[in-house]
Length: 599
Image (tube, rainbow, N blue to C red; front, side, top):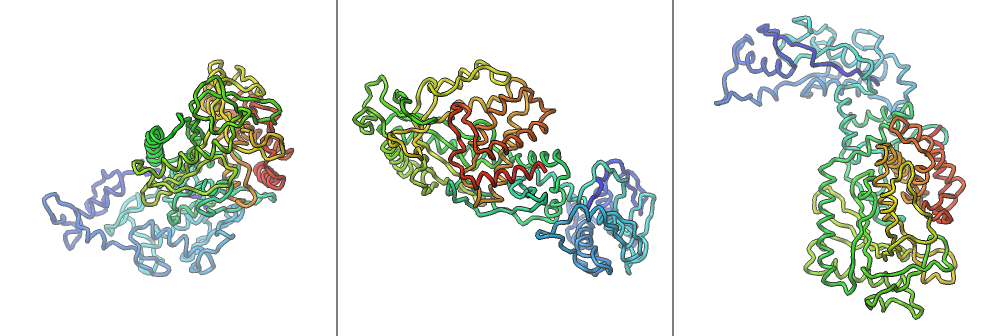
């Protein structure tokens, strides 16, 4: 249902008792009546003072109640509560007394039915109301003033203010540009509130996406922790019980066009600053303390690289997961001889440091599993060390044996705040740029200095090669986290464009698809989107903000095409197909969802 936004600021209110007419708001007039005219029997005497400051008497305020003219319920504390009650409980059925019918599995209305409805007042028979909000205002302003619910509401001035000393009702013209699918003024405020608090309530995890038939379904939250591929990768804020305003927002979520759809996605990405700061400050404190303990306990000199979406400023939800690479501060070299695309072997470089010698085989190659086991042992010793107080707030998570990360759940120690997922990833840093990787040259969006910084180094992690290979036990997965962070973080630097906006919207769409199909989507992740979007940046030169919607549509089309064909090239090593580990059934599910968005 749609309701116009009211312009209250343009009105001047007049007291119906003493005729004073300089009140700028209903609240001012209501306070005046309560203070000046409720202390004597005739309603004109001033209210006796209750203290040195003349504060209000709470008993008088609490005594004001409103009665429903239909069901005679008389425990409403304000007109808005009564208005919501009437619109929800008495606007269905011929007699006006039936409860509001459900129109779907989640009780949402079909927009076509809403637009076609004509609503009739069950008291006076007037039948030209186009919305529940209009009827609700009619009932509260016309029929609430008499005992039997049928008389007109008395008016003492042209503004329609009440003579009985109660708070007056405002009446303002309709503004069609601000109509909403809601029946009460507080719903409009609810829209803004839900957008501000979207990660907690009304987020795009609950956003209806079109299915193959072009319909829409309301998706609620799934399990508190996702078990696969990372057992505790996603945590969720405890949701409050939604208000009636939030429930009515389901109509607004049926976006009639792509622009509104994108607007609602972008609104859901906004996070409360104070909550974000709380989480990041806690994690920074944890990592700083961990490095101090690690410097004392570890027999290997270790350095840290902060990676992940928080550090390249493309985070789309709460800061509930962080990735950190810990690498040995020892010069090592990469060997790409007879290695599959995206993998290499690591051997000791020009150094005399013996720290990694226990993990090097007789041919001089560093064995990933030995290095990983030793680093995991260091992480565990640091976490359980008695001097590391932050470690007492952590819980180690079991992961698949092939996982390259040591994962912790870090408890913030605040009621209602879920733990934070922390990945500690053992790595090796290699100076320079890998030979199989293409050079990152200056372009329309990549400045020369950015390209040079991106190619300063790369890392390798202990992720196994899944296929048969003669050197499988020695293969390390090449990670371009340093280059990715540099390119994504400064993607808009050249033209102040919308590259990062498009990327974040795609990530939000992907997250919603995963929450909608948790059992069907397991392998498809943000890394695949990152490899796709970097190449998409190269193909399209103009990323001015005016073209954001067109570019987003085009990115969804091209992404669907790539996933359908089963190929997304590694941006840095084109021969490496990053989709090769995603099963065909899962790829078809992703394509189906993407195609549904474009219908």
